[in-house]
Image (cartoon, rainbow, N blue to C red; front, side, top):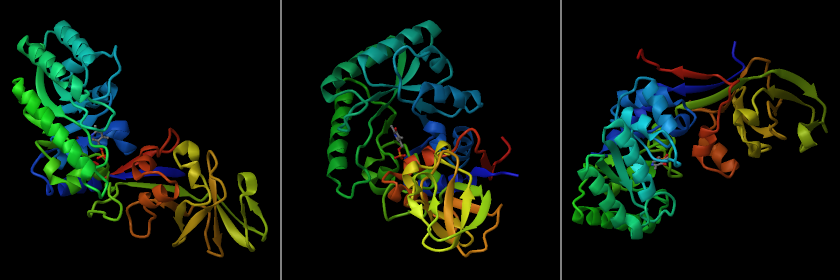
Amino acid sequence: MWQSEVRVDLDAVRANVALLRTRTAAQIMAVVKSDGYGHGMVPCARAALEAGATWLGVATLGEALAVRAAGITAPMLSWLHAPGLDFAAGITANVDLSVSSRRSLDEIVAAATIVDRPARIHLKIDSGMGRGGAAPADWAALVEAAAKAQADGHVEIIGVWSHLASADDPDPSSVDRQLAAFTDGLDAAARLGVTPQLRHLANSAALLARPDTHFDLVRPGLAVYGLSPIAGNTFDLRPAMSVRARVALVKRVPAGQGVSYGQTYVTPRETTVALIPIGYADGVPRAASGVGPVALGGRTHTIAGRVCMDQFVLDVGDLPVQPGDVAVLFGGNAGDPHADEWAAVCDTINHEIVARMGSARVPRVYEGERGS
Ligand SMILES: *Cc1c(COP(=O)(O)O)cnc(C)c1O
């Protein structure tokens, strides 16, 4: 018998990838970083590939090697590397590596020399986000150095890419500016003789809202898991994650009963309280104290008082709730609260709500798993 669980519907992942395919002619790189946004990296990678994604995207080299260790051979890019990693292992495992600086190019060339095999690289330009990627002023020198490394047989330049800061913004001007800077970067690379097979820029929001950013490959993460990057439009995506817990204890308490740490909630009348055994150590944001919506007994309740490390309380009034009944924090079925509502009340984004969910003591259960 389970007490709390994170349930992941792999058919929803497949349906979302199929839906995304109808919205672009570009190849789809399913982004499965951070354990598939909390949904499970390897099962979600498999489901996305089954539905027609042709690439996988991860942040770290460690994530990439874990995908390979699971036997997945699809093309894959990793893009966030501190110096000193085992790039030789990445090259040997056929992991494409993002390169944003001369320093990292030199390190990858050295690794390629050791394993005697060209590294597959994607050169990244900062088109305006101000995070990863080479600054435009450093771009030509990076492209030149990479072109020389390619001529020497140390690297193969597979892609040129960048990332968007505000593709979810209804004001298009930020994407317009980044698109222009990216195109300038591509033109500069072409003048230096570098014309990669894959140019890529779009995340989920740009995939759904800006077809002019699709180029050869798009990199959706959030939408693969059925959440929308754009408030107010679901795009018919299906949330893949449900978080549930079974009521551990039910009791009647009088009016005026303070509930949970700090007693920030006080019962307004005699009522039934239900103890839900999942807490902030399991990914339930403590910021949901007094505001998080939870479905139980056919109604949606607001968390009464503070979320604790392991548990929280619902005031269910006079509903006939029993120990063992299933409370749903959020999910994809009719009547379930939505991860978007959790994001709104916790003053964060839906990415964070799902990515942080789960712990060693909360099993992740898959629906729709196929034999692999
Ligand atoms: C996380 C990430 C994505 C996916 O972004 P979503 O908004 O979840 O679609 C794409 N590209 C890069 C570089 C990322 O870090």
